[in-house]
Image (tube, rainbow, N blue to C red):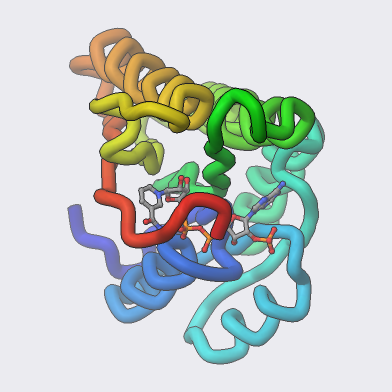
Length: 188
Ligand SMILES: NC(=O)c1ccc[n+]([C@@H]2O[C@H](COP(=O)([O-])OP(=O)(O)OC[C@H]3O[C@@H](n4cnc5c(N)ncnc54)[C@H](OP(=O)(O)O)[C@@H]3O)[C@@H](O)[C@H]2O)c1
């Protein structure tokens, strides 16, 4: 795929992997839609890139995927790639784990990924092409003690991606997951 002038939407673009992907795709000539909650960080990043628009807000807000698609179409007239990257890792022993923090993680790592994916894929089906990439984790392929809830969110992303990949085979729409190894300590 020639990336030049194609349009990519990146969630969780204000730091870490999402920010690094934004910088790489900018270097490849892509036009970008960047989202996360930290408006100042997004604007700072966008100012350092050639062609990026930002929309700050919680991706767990059900309206957000629609607003992001609308911004892409209004700004650039197309949307070619969606990177579902926003995610957090909340882990811990049973005695210590914060159940509310776990359910927040599920909303971000699973529900928001499903919402963004389905809104993007409905659009991709209308136009007959598109690329959805879900950032999973090595924790979506292998479990370990105290990581169960996080493992579950990333296994969900892997299963979702695989089923979509089969459903969309031959349509011109591509779906893939990326499972990076962990470079961070839990809670960071
Ligand atoms: N780093 C690793 O070692 C590693 C390994 C394997 C997989 N992963 C996965 O890779 C992805 C990115 O991880 P990372 O390490 O780069 O994380 P990070 O540096 O903590 O970045 C997370 C991004 O998500 C955004 N975010 C968090 N909560 C949000 C919410 N409720 N609504 C909208 N945006 C939200 C954050 O921005 P705001 O705070 O501004 O909203 C930030 O841009 C995650 O899905 C993670 O599970 C990471």
